[in-house]
View 1 (cartoon, helix red, strand yellow):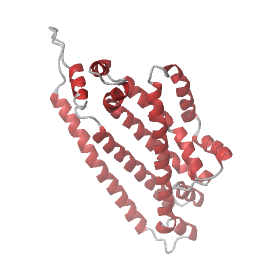
View 2 (cartoon, rainbow, N blue to C red):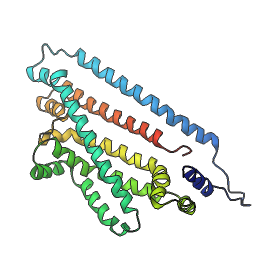
View 3 (cartoon, rainbow, N blue to C red):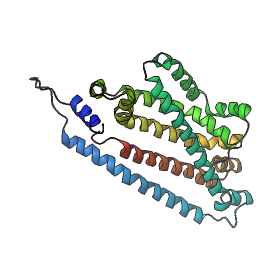
View 4 (cartoon, rainbow, N blue to C red):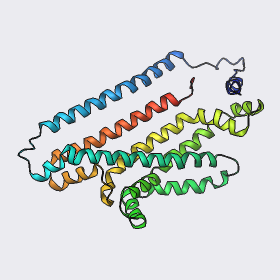
Length: 279
């Protein structure tokens, strides 16, 4: 059965000779240039992230915390405030993204099956409502339903970021060439094998793009977690605004940016190496 998938894809992609002169294959040089840019991006991004983190560390070290007010000194304490808040931010973003993946991908697969296609518009409407609803209002609604804490934030952010992964899963699966699917079935593959060996691998780039979008959304929205007792780096940003202290505000905002860029880069790496060869 391991030879069936390559054979199906090769059969479906076998070119049909035509006398039309307009049938021109893509320029391999352009494809090679795009591949090079893609690879360079994977190496340049961590360098930029490291440079930004180094600049932030130098900026933090250069602050005169000895003569600063007590509130500023407390807000910029690495071991007392910044590191615990960073951990909370990472936990909220990670758990909410994992929850989105666990819900959205199986749901997207189900809604692309013939039996459930009729309810797809209804489910997408609910997912659209979750993202269209203001994030602040969503958190307040979660506060009344589930109470304070990180778990409430995780559930609200998962609902908020559900749409990109759900929609991209459906678009990716619907975009698979039908001739490839029919070729696999013609070679004796079951529907489950067609899904796991052909449809999902070919839809990986589109699905991963949705996951990356959800990750960045969750990291940004996790900044509001402090409003309902979820902690995270929003506490530092809020403290900078309340105290009218630019250093506190800058440190909090840059740390959120570093976390977002890091997660986006990790998503790009996963998208790169989970993509089937030849795509």
